[in-house]
Length: 383
Image (cartoon, rainbow, N blue to C red):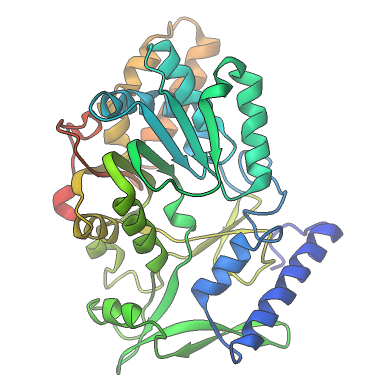
């Protein structure tokens, strides 16, 4: 795509090598693979996928900016909710996909300030490169707390306390579905002379077929269904002994996700702070994401025996837990510190920025308290 920045020769070679692996995978499967498999390989192939390779992903030098990178206020405010959950379960935090490690630093720093440190802070991170960066950041900023932080190779068999996942669900593979006049078809990937091409077939998965038959979309509509999100929620629910699973991501409830006017779905790619819609562009060098169907998250958790504790916008959640109180700790006359924090707060909570699109959803069991992050503005009824 001519409008996007050109990669270095080394980066292009990296992408070409990953493309060769994907072409081999397509050949091994008779000339076609589900898009979810393409997305999985593009993002997670060991040493080659976007999240597995040593490329800069977060912040101004990367491809996108997450809330923890925008402001320490995000992690500090979130810590207030974690204190309440740990007080009614176990002083243990697990973070899925910790990115640069910035959120862990901000949370632990605030929990230490509040004298509510967890006994353990575990990080499950699939990228060896990101693990190294997380360890360096924590060593730099909180060396005295590093003995509380542990990196996991796999999800523990039993979870107690609180598990947080910030912008994890949106990066899980999705299947693409095209609604036709006869029946929904699965859009998969085939090899082409100059890369890859789209090709539709009847859904390979009976589960995918069953889900799509229940979704009423106009003929010609294209959208996503994430079996991977459902699988992760189900697996975590089975492991949860007592506590809360807290997910933060951008997305909608099913009625808005599969709205008749949203006929092109939500699939989006991010490359050097440029958003575009071509997942075949430089595989391995760009992020591929999809908005989250929060109804699927809630229903899967409930079907697995969990309780829905709350669902709300990022703006409501952060205000409920007292993010404005954190800003008020800084003297407005100290413009050097106050003005940047005020601007960051605006970015995190404004409906025109991250405040409305991003949502918080909490599911769990054995926590007999109304979570403070959902004390007002709870949108659970919309799911």
